[in-house]
Each structure stands twice: as C-alpha cells, then as structure tokens.
Length: 483
Image 1 (cartoon, rainbow, N blue to C red):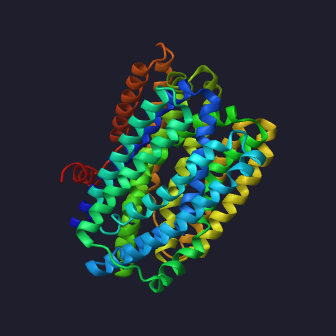
Image 2: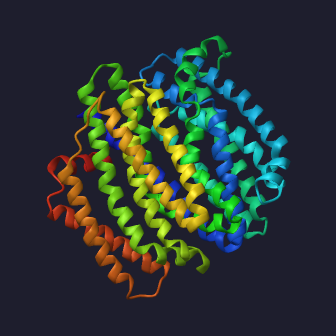
Image 3: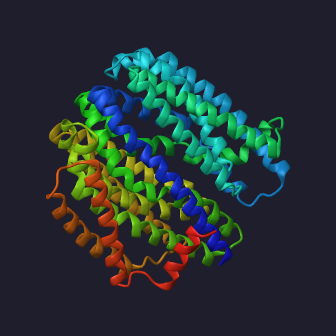
C-alpha cells in the first residue's frame, strides 16, 4: 500500500505539472493566433513539428534505455557514469543534427516549406538544446526525483509563456517566439545540470560502456520518427497540398482536442519506471495491478473530457482564436476521441517495453505511421483538413487494437468494462446538458469556464450515483492529494 500511495502521489504531482504545461498552449493560442494570424501560426506550428521530429532522433533514443536500466540503480558512481556517458553522447549527436538542419535549411525551405529559410536557421539551435533537455530531465525519472523534474518543467513552461507573450506582443513575431524557446530551454538546462552535478558529480564518459544502451535503444530508434509521422506529419501534408494558413487552423483545433492526452502523460511518466522495477523483481502481479489501475484512472478522466470538448468545440475556438478558426470544430471532436485510444495504446505498450519486445512495438508504430501518412495523402486532397483528423482517429484506434491483442501474450490485463460503461453513460448525459446550456449565453471565457465547472460537477455526480466509485478509488484520490 505504501508503494501504491507513492505511485499515486507521483501521478498527481506530474498530473498537476502536465495541466500547467497544457494551459501553456491554451494561454498562448489566443496570443499567437490573434497577433500573427493564420499564416504566422502555421509557420510556428511547422517549426515546432520539425524540431519535434529531429530532437528525439538526435538523442539516439537513449532516454528510454536510461529509464529502463537505472530504475533499480542506487549506486551514485554508476548513476554519475551513466549520466556523463549519455549527456556527452547526445551533446555530440545533437551538435551534428543542429549543423545539418542549418546547412539544409535553404533547400528544404525552397523545395518543401512555403516560408523563409530564416526561420529554420534560427530554430536549428533548438535541436541541440531540446535533445539535451530531453536526456537531462529524463534522469530525474528513474531516480524518483519527481519534484525536481516537476519544478523544472513548470519553470520552463512559465518562462516560455512570459517570453513568448512579451516578444510576440512587442512585434517580434515568429522570430521572437523561437528565441524565447531557446532562452527558456537554456536556463532550465543550466539549472538541471547544477542539480545533477551537485549531487552526483561529473565523470569522464566511457564510450565503450555505451553498447547496452544502444542495444536497447537502436531497435526503437525510429520510434520518434514514427511517432512524429503519426502525430505531426499531417501538418506537412496539409502545408504541401493546401497552404500554411490551413496548417494554422488545423493545428489550433488539433491542439485543443489533444488536451485529452494531458491525462496520460503523468501516468506514462510514473508508470514506466515503476513497472520496469516490478518486472525486474518478477512481481508480475504487482505490475498488472499498476497497469490496470492506470488504465482505469486514465479512462475515468479522458472520456468525459472528449465528450465535453466535442460539444463545446465551436464555442471554444471562437473564444480563444479568430472567427476563421471555428470551421475546424469537427477536428476537435475527432482528435479528442482519437487521443483516448492513443492513451490506451500507451499503457498497453509498456507491457511490450518491460518485456524488451521493442521490435514488436516498432512494428505496431511503423504500421500506424504508414497507414496514417497514406490516409492523409488520400483524404486531405478530397475533404481538406477534416481528412487529416479522420486519419488521426483511425490510426490511433488501429495501433491501440494491435497493442492490446499482442500484449495479452505476455501480461494480460483485465479492464473494468462496467466502470468504462458508467463513464460513457455519465459523460453522454453531461455532454447533452452542457450542450443545451451553451445555447443560452453569449460565448466568452467566463461562460466557457462556468460550463466546464458545471460539466465536471455533473459528470462526477452521475458517476457516484451510478456507483462508479468505490472505497478503493476514494482512498486512492486521497493518497494523491494528501502526502
């Protein structure tokens, strides 16, 4: 029970952190869309998508290996050597990728992007800094230092909001926003290194010891690329087939729908090192218990969120963006329900990871990437940006089905079907009531917040009336909130 309490509290801490990170996007969305409009927001989105593609690859996918192998380590000298090895390896590889992006920015912008290469050149340094941020912050995860991780992520989020808002509102446009990201990441990187070096010190890297990490990480080296294709390639397809304005409109709606993923992120962060440790100890019953609990917790929060976002999508887009963005309301609904299935896929995928079945996971994600890209190429020219959202939904459903069916061979889970049914019923009634109420007033931030609070109250009230909560669930919520 003590371990479960700690697990629950860590999920709560990372959950709060992730909510703050999610609000960053909500706060910046109206600032960016109403200041730099559709075209500027489209450029901003494609820059973020490009950095999001290259940076994880620049880490050589070493961060999952760090979590997998250091979760049960306690010796400070081993931790120091591992950090120095991984950090300096990524420093070298990140520099190479940064220079490569800078050198090809001109032909890449000319042949593919529909904006100046100047933006890519400024952004290239973000590849190195982001890659270092990834592996540095990831070290806090297997060591159980969730507070340090949370504080640094929150600090970076606040710095990004303040710097981006200041530069954009001061007329520096997309360039100012990019420089803001660079400054915020550098500050957090310096602070993170200070914490790690003060506690563990720094060692001369022994690159001969890199092999075990590469053996684990290389089979899934393409997963960041595959994940990028699944999550972000639709922006490239839209930008190439349509124009950068459509990228901006689609991205705004997609980002709102993807808020549902805020509930899986804290679970992912804490769950992986926890079940990795239990697997190493051959505690399969304990691992299954944590996975089942995580699935139940995620669905309890994500299902009503998707219903609520769907019925309020048009109003939300009107409140935080411009009128031209409201045509993308259907995208919010499609993406939000797709994100539920992606979250389910994520939880089941950890079974394959702890069993070192990285090739199988790579196959599932690879198939999803090919399917998603092909469907985008087919649907976007026919039905526009809605086609990209349909592709996202179908892809997430398919990879979730694959992950569930294949992972059952190694560690079968038992989802609470009755509880899921109660969540869907309570969410449906809540959505209907909120939709009717939304027709009464004039769209505004205050009106939307009142609808959101009312929806939360109705959902949890109905769920309790349906006896969806038991003593165990209430105890777990108390553990999350009370240290």
